[in-house]
Length: 223
Image 1 (cartoon, rainbow, N blue to C red):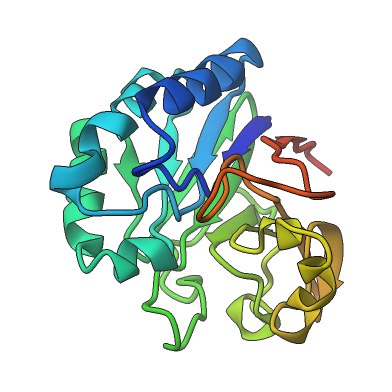
Image 2 (cartoon, one colour):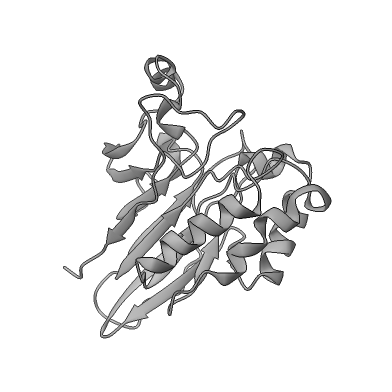
């Protein structure tokens, strides 16, 4: 199962629909099985930047396009409005819930933790339905920041995170670990592997120094 991970677009006054279109074209060109939008997609309200986000409606993946809200959706004061708007684009917005994705004879359970920043970030795994197969399904938890309590000790096999921008500007990269345990790439947080993307956009000016943007495509294999 190939998962395209898109996070931290920060579409707004500087990054317009043309930027979103380039991201969509790159993702579709990889022909993923599923697309996960990891929050911090916008900098502004629905009325201000909805048009710039519109190309996300053209994302194409046979198992679906899923989204979770990030802290910037909360900062806009319209977190719920943005989730509602995402659904008008054909995106399945996960509201602290989980879904089971099946490819061939294998399945994976994907849980989204979308709590307000500062709240208990435990992902919604305790309320998941029992699997129909004797094998425990994997779980992906697309979060905005890889804080240890988010998935540790819950049996989650992989956590997908963003928010850090990989530091975005040198030398801020060296300050980020004071607040986040993973800056970018794959690392263990407690007993959970956490894959943190640097994100496709940038916060504030569209400038990155020694922290290039990325759209990871993750290949999951049944074990």
